[in-house]
Length: 411
Length: 173
Image (cartoon, rainbow over all chains, first blue to last red; front, side, top):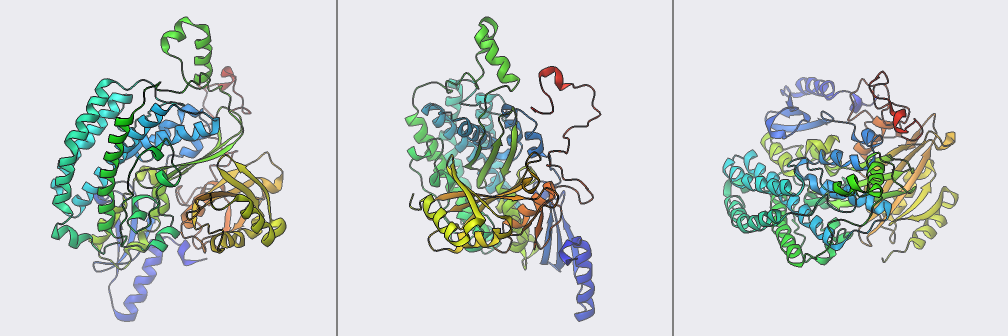
């Protein structure tokens, strides 16, 4: 039996014994997690420490595994958005929209331009919310609470926009096959305008607070660095990969939802360290703001959903007074909708990288198989490699810069 | 698209003959089947060949097909991506229903480590040569493989729900 199959405690106990006999050094085991405040979620790292320095580590994940892939195989298609919400709950609308787009690809539905633009707006707002959390929490983990409290109110503002659009805040369950459940209210647009007005100066101030801050730079530059080659091999995508200098972005490589209509840059870093990840995320917020402005400026007129009565619920009023609508309503709610026999893979650029949905249908009311490509799960395995040989406090900074979301990690 | 799918197909058939088969375009992804004993060679070739350059393993997952013939009851699906020409491919490897085993690709892509562990955890597919093939999301003491189709999702003792009244049988849900 390979040593790696042993539990890390047993493996490390052997190592400690060995080193004690060799040179009298006193290594120790440290449990980072599962409920450590700096892990921002429930996952455990068992670390072998030499004083403050990390010699080795092993992550244990799965504490909030909720069997989403199994549940998805037993739920009609429209009931699966609620599962996608709970993966990366910091940017739930991106997952929601990704799931609808996957379904639309499988069903061959073309959505109106207006819906695509509205989706872009909501996805970019979600990306900003995600990056606000990650960047400001990095400040907290390196000792600067002020910035966090200062910008966090804007996540609240974004949640109010979600609330205006779909009624929910954190786990949004937003949208339908082919569009949105209702037209966006004027109040929603007013709130977005207010956000675009108020947020940029605050974000500028937040950046001023940390980007050239001597203490912050000393704590993050050269910490938890990963080379581009290694990052690619480890399956990194999103800001963490771009920080290593690779300009891979799904929005550009494989534009979905009309991303090709907008002008934006892909910020890249150079060294792949914690500081670069911080800077890339901050720069992405500016790009997202620019995309939202462009989308609002160019927002076409039109319906807020595609004309697909087989899949899109009719208005309630018609259900009560029109037999046709009642039949459609019943069929959709019972999940008895025509679904072709197919396989699709649809990627979207999530807050942390490429969120992919691999859907296999067998013509029935539920997916035959639905696999979520969860970027966190894939890149978190590099963590022990990245922190090996570093100080414990650097490991904390590295962890928060990777933006590991426990919900996405465990599915 | 700089890299034509016909080129991929031609190069693979030239080098691997009957080990690769069933090429077809499914939506936006070119899909084919690889014999399970040569997956490592094929993926290494796809990654290292100067024209193919599939540098990124996007996704790896398992599927259970209990209704297929015995030699094809499990499948491992690999999604690869060539970032230079922006081409995606999907590779399917079918495995034996009684003894699902396939070589591990951890030597080629570090990202496959946890994804193979996940596939093992849920389907019981053995990845030969994997450095640390143990459960990852489920607890170590678990004895079954929960994403196999025979594993029930809900407690079979539940009496408050009878799906037959809604036109659902075990065949159609």
